[in-house]
Amino acid sequence: MVRNLFDLTGKTAFITGGTKGIGYAIANAFVDHGATIVFTSRTADAVKVVADEINQRAGRNAASGVVADLADVAQTLAAYDQAVESLGRVDVLVCNAAALPQTFGPADQTDAAEYARLVNVNIVNNAALMNHAAVDMKARRDGDILVTTSASGVRPSFGVLAYGVSKAGLNFLVRGLGAELAPYNIRVNGVSPGLTRTAAMEERTRQDPEWIESLTAGIPLGRVVEPEEIAAGMVFLASAGGKSMAGQILNIDGGEPGTGAPKAG
Image (cartoon, rainbow, N blue to C red):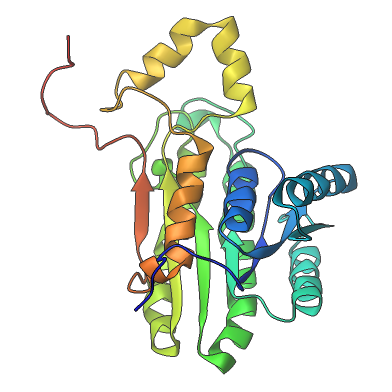
């Protein structure tokens, strides 16, 4: 009998994009639950600062980082191999890094190059990393591959259609690989965040409070999602508590918009 369903003690993890926002929250949550991690960042300074911060807070040598950009697939695969060499093995791969939209607006204002960039980084490069990690996981018949997707890949969102298309493809990849790798006891799952708090969002909200109010008006819970809530979903999927999850997208988005009861007065 497992006494602590969410204990990650003894687990190792490789997390892409682990120095800010959701990735930073995931890195901290994994360490807090006992894991040892390697994370990536595009800058060496961020790698050192975040690793030192996590290790000091945890009181152990639990985190290290490596410079890698998901847009460079060769660099990303090399970073993963470096993590395997450092950790001995990677039990959990967290594909969190992503290419973000460069423009916001109607679909007819988004050119084909933007679609190509987003699809290549968010689908193609993540697929390469996931399949690369699966080789060793299949050999030992155990592992977790987790992906940060997006609510815009579940329900189309105005202004970011190309980004949503790339995330919808990533969701499909999770479901497909989830079925294909489950017989090897490899659990492939995703977490789909809704509107999630970031430093950029907080700055914009301070400048324009009505902006965030308009965005949260359609969310049943009436608030943005906190990065730590996304991280909690990742901990669940990586732990004993999530061992029966395969090929699933866990929506953490404040609720499904619909024709429910009116707002509470």
